[in-house]
Image (cartoon, rainbow, N blue to C red):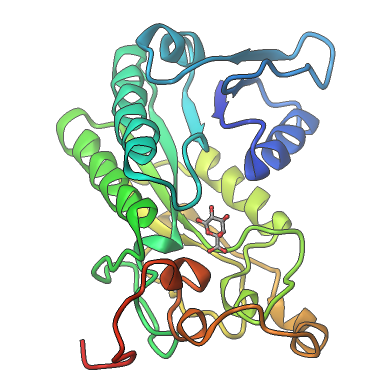
Length: 269
Ligand code: 15L
């Protein structure tokens, strides 16, 4: 059976994955960041540390076949933090994958790589990046790094442009961006089991009727989402929309509005 490592195991998505993968009885090593993880089951393989340190990365990746890399800064932050966690940390992780013979990395990318597309556009897998801030930009860089390690060293990656991975949709934007937990678990299962994926970028999104993102081209993964945010539409649309006009105009929602200073929203290009 494949040995799996999970970084960012105490984060929002990492904690969902950790619980589920343990429940499936998979051989899992989970890593937290600054704080140690309390084992959820007897003898659980847990560790923690700073992934910018090669020795910590080696402790995480020794004997591992597939790394699910959820660690890193997951929101817009000042540049120095983004550089340390999402650029430097990621290089250390991929270098560690190379040293330790890890076959595949699941890289938590984000929809904020394309957050400046208007909500009226439907996006294919090969659309040009249009990041909505430094965080999204760091994920574009991460996707390119994943590609480089495939081209140079044959390490496979699934770069998952995660939408809104929450238990249930709570605002209108989620009707397009929702990535339900059941679909997330199925997605990760495919990332572990799919025989050959090369370097693949794929939308981490459920089968939402109002989705902006088209996963055609990622068939090698065998991801077949079943959840649909539309089931919650009536309830969600009866409530307020928390986004500003700019946030409602662009796919990145509130992230797109954070630094926006143009006064010609919707101008060509
Ligand atoms: C992300 O990339 C964030 O990590 C998460 O907190 C959400 O904001 C999500 O995107 C989203 O766009 O809903």
